[in-house]
Image (cartoon, rainbow, N blue to C red; front, side, top):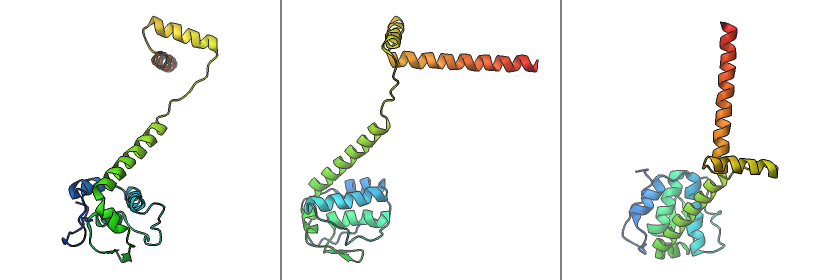
Length: 171
């Protein structure tokens, strides 16, 4: 446990969010993810609203605790800051808001992964493209797989030739 676990007193509005799922999600969250979750939850209850006035330079643990407090806590104060009334909307719809936040975060992460794995493009003239396709088809390979194998073979051949040259020089 990260030490940010919020203690429940049983007072105030109960959240329908699952405390175990929330805590598990927060255990692997960094400071950016926690800040994102705080702002996301707040904007669910108060669209277009800003928490910037209430948030200072908070650590990952403080922000994770704030997420738990927003969903499960009592009162309107946390970490020396007093938050306005929409906090009760977060608590009232905790399960829905947390599920949306978790889904939105996963989509964000997946989009970033896809963007970082964008395909590389090599432009070749139409005649060369035909030759690549013909040679790849002769070996029952996709164009990209054929080119990868061809480049590996050429690289190995160059390395072997280079190594043989040095062996002959030394001998």
